[in-house]
Image 1 (spheres, one colour):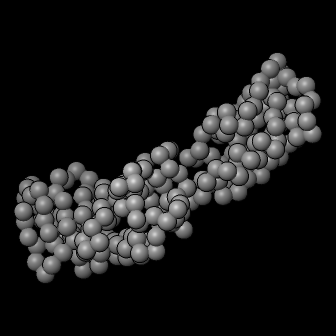
Image 2 (cartoon, helix red, strand yellow):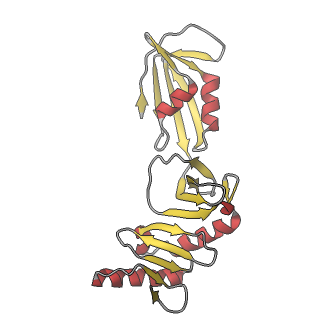
Image 3 (cartoon, rainbow, N blue to C red):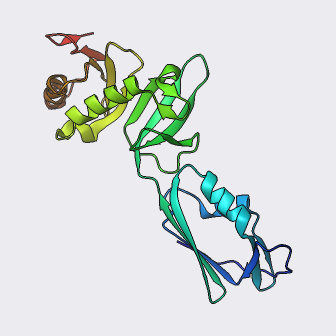
Length: 220
């Protein structure tokens, strides 16, 4: 992605630079305009005024950025960014308020109340499931168990929401279906979910709630 800006420059400090164009590479979820605004880029005439120290502070403070490299050549500044790999979207709620966020493969919150590009499924957790900006070990284990068991099942692609606020069961909804499935986190439970999903699709009927957490399916 390329952002070209024009500006003029009067030296202000050792970290202040002037360039005629600015190029961002590697951005998928982060806005280049947001980086430019936070960094205080100024355009005037034929150059861009950039405080390099301030720019680097902004890049280091962005949780979604894993690493970056700044190259200046021929009056062009190129900023090469490697974003952190995102894993799941989470909705965290409870007595301490609510937020929606994005967690990476290490279960760290890398984006809070700013969702650049939403994809299913959404995982719902309690406030107590988060320790600072990290998902607590107990919640992390449940997520790993559930999605690990679902890995090779077609139903994984149909997951819309996985509500894990109840410590004894998971409440699952699927895309295009109104039914709430109450279930456990094991492969056996997910196999049952996939079978029932196919069955109710075939008859065109979807009960409001199906509890498959026990040894039989209970429709409610």
